[in-house]
Length: 186
Image 1 (cartoon, rainbow, N blue to C red):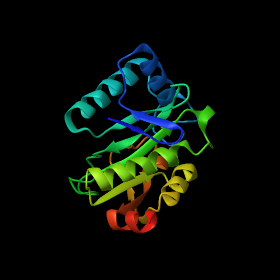
Image 2: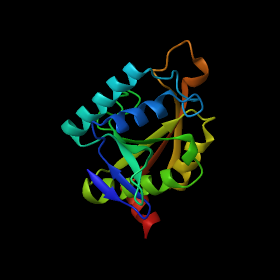
Image 3: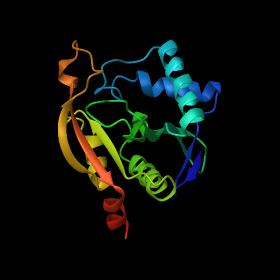
């Protein structure tokens, strides 16, 4: 997949040392991963990178690389994923999610990429709705959800968050339907 926005290229990850190193950077940074149960080692990051590439190949849905249009420099990721959180979410649920390198926070890149992906989701893929979720204290992410026109639905305890990190179990669930998006976009 490849989409472009005013400043970004949204693309599949490439199996290069640069893409792998950047992927590890954002998955191991203490501040970026504040609201996740653990930082990933190089081996864990490589395994997740391979899983992301596999999912892209199999479903076309995954967290895509974000690069600056002018330079090609990677800034983060944003994409679509089937979260497999039954019975909390239905089997067909698709989430939108993101992660940015710290040096690119506050520049609006996530909102820009996510808007392009919502357009793709509702206009090309014809999906009925998209969800997103985060620890409620992750106000950067929940603010993006709100800027995208997503509505708070409810809280839930994330089943894959280990008991050793109880402060990260509770998540706020947001949703936007195709109709909501079209009404907002026009």
